[in-house]
Length: 75
Image (tube, rainbow, N blue to C red):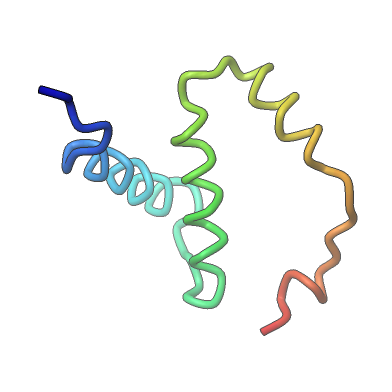
């Protein structure tokens, strides 16, 4: 029998880390930017087995365009 790659334990662990980060680091998350916080934590969770240097190098290799405030806050 094949094991499932995703379980309720996995999603519970992700949301637990997300909630702790909001309460401890950010203290407030606006509804308009919630998807950006979730994207950031999804990346962190999906790369949690990587070394910090590997994660940084992967992140840095994807930084090939400028993101300005107007684009970031556009609705």
